[in-house]
Length: 614
Ligand code: AGP
Image 1 (cartoon, rainbow, N blue to C red):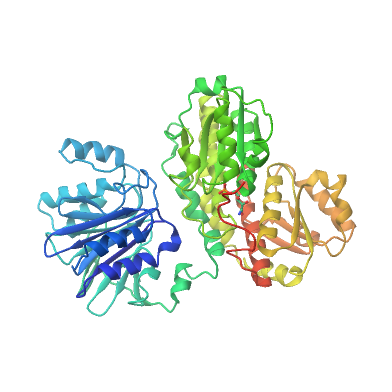
Image 2 (image 1 turned 120 degrees about the vertical axis):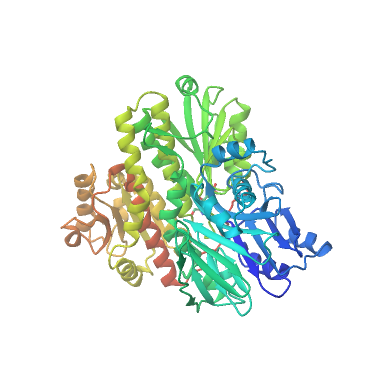
């Protein structure tokens, strides 16, 4: 997501900061900026688009100051424009920020009343004015940030500088990463070690609620709730810069798999009101009237996003009592579907640039449909062509094989279905509250699934045994049928093994002919309403000597005796959250098979991250 690099030292900092930002480019961003103190005056430069646009500006008017801060922004609140790029200023104060300030609307109103003028559409600008306000009340910069933090709700990593207190950077974090780099006569703050590894490997990883006061000759650490002094605990990092970009993971895909608890928490953040048992979605401009008079609802997408739509259909039917058509964009656009001005189309896309999805929504708009979208990339084409967008906030997804983008889409669709159910009066308050409470546990369930003891072992054993398989089957029933499709897609994308996803009940209508001792079948069979039916399908596979890889609940005592390999998920997962949690073994299985085969996991052959051709 966004990147931060702050520097306090003896050398001119412009190039050092730009070099650090360059090392964060892999995270994806849409604008960049820098603020540098020039002998008591703060100079800033910002640009829309790539870092090179900023560099061109800086070449014309270079900065020579020795402390400053830079940022690459991945838009969340406000379009990716120069005005919205960081740093944001309030007089002599400049702030860069990663994350989301949830209470920015009320803070903005309060600060406006005090006379502060807002120049951007961002949530970040409130931090700059809030710090300036505490500075005006006589606090030094560290105390001003400390007091400002007590007013901020949400998730953030911030770095603040003030030209009237030269040489000091103040950094703080809550839920978004920030590290302190300890150099010789120079010190750093950065959102990611990779930004500063070229200059120091001695790193203090800021913990939740810690505040760092960084000067060129030293760093002080404070507790952000009490302002008590805390000891620095630097570690010497031995990662190479490339490893650091991947957070120590071997591939971006693996990193992104492990980011899912955080990504899903970001999709949910600020969108659930348990008190009112409602979903808070001001970005979805649909009234009860719109829904009640809609003739039909279409979910339109490609690839993995289409699989998310297939899971979404279960949510919409169960929670809102509405029927939805789930359509492949590449097919819908060529059909004469009866779309009219009472049709609601919801496009689902990670990139927001998929040509087929874009063409399908344009077609639907021509016929008068109201188009909404679920998307990860802010300001991309599909949101721009929609009347409202529910952003998934998964953060940049670099691996071509979609992982966290998929699970965050599932959560967005789940939220939307509850929202529709409430708007239509088909979901009562008590049921909605229970549903929302369960959904709020999704991040911890994913975390639990990723940290089961001995977690990687069965995947490695399967990869060793089956990496030369020519074909694999994936079976799932009910809301796990789309996960079987997704498991097969993941495997073929990155391991190049042919794979087919099937509805478990369809196996006997044809695919069963494929089964023999060389074709492993992955069966999604955790404890749910279909448990026994699917277990019978498993028996049918085994009766034909088919090897079985079983995704089972951890408390299933018979799992091991029914399968060649067991991929456990935590016990007791509510049925509606099973698609989310069982996505993890699908992703990990594909990952380990590909890694064992030595394919290019992050950039598999013939595939592109964003498919902008029809
Ligand atoms: C998923 O792993 C794929 N790489 C692919 O199927 C992808 O989901 C599809 O191209 C749609 O992309 P979008 O979500 O960006 O529209």
